[in-house]
Length: 397
Ligand code: AMP
Ligand code: MG
Image (cartoon, rainbow, N blue to C red; front, side, top):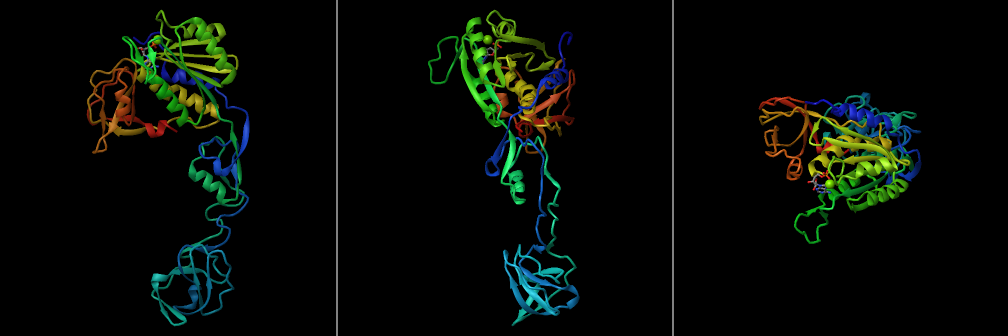
């Protein structure tokens, strides 16, 4: 039944074999680097913390000096104390440097203040509440690997070692266009036979999620000339062109001949559901991926194929979406002969429910879902089985 169909893994391997990161690297302020892709690994030129310091508000002490101590000094964060004399304690605040001679901090809740002295209600352990120099980051150590999408905490980490700017890959220029004479935009009258161009919204949103510089060429009429014209324009302006519709073998499918005329094209029939047809090629220096028009199919094939290709083009090294083993709270007795990507969502019991209609035209399923179950070909699922779940939260990064 799957004869002549290409497996998802083979198609993905062929796509990724061609993908290469955009070469241009730009230096951006660390303050503005969130969501960009780091082009070179970053090392620290300093220890963090740069000195031993207190993890608590309390008293810095020498453990061997006993439990009754004179408070001889006060050290605030940002200032430096004097060496601790025998038999004394230093009032100390979180982040303040540990004075030479002290070997522990006792929390203020665990002392009794008696005039100018403190009595410790317990003997601290050596090292207690001390953050040691270099315990977070060692000088010379790698703090961020190349090819990582920078999250807020990554830019914070870079800043914590004083890095002011970061080298990131230039944003990928992603061109989108939509084929189909039936398409109209919301706000326009919906004449008989027409439908709204929902894919434009879904795919634009995805382009935004992945931090692309978007070129949206809108709806292209179902003619060879119009399709060729927009392809030429997009190819001169984009790194990657993604289209929806017009890649099946219907009479009005001009994407295939247009790409063939302007560049080179591979047409694949993929053993997956939803989403059988997929087109891959190049037009001038731009890559081209043609997605099916069915709204669920274009959404799923974007996540399964365009996402990793795009990430590679952006310079991301680890492009595989993490899957989670989760419990199916549904039966799926009549699986397809093709690998399926089922729309499911978490329930309150921590299991997965399935959307009752898995038809590739029912966009409601994608909005209702929390992600996709990656179900192997011809694999029946019984309630209670563990299945491979790809949450949107993983697919969107
Ligand atoms: P096609 O791949 O062009 O044969 O289209 C397959 C199905 O998807 C048809 O029912 C189209 O009307 C529908 N479709 C195509 N493009 C879009 C779009 N941009 N938004 C919503 N539905 C679409
Ligand atoms: Mg069409």
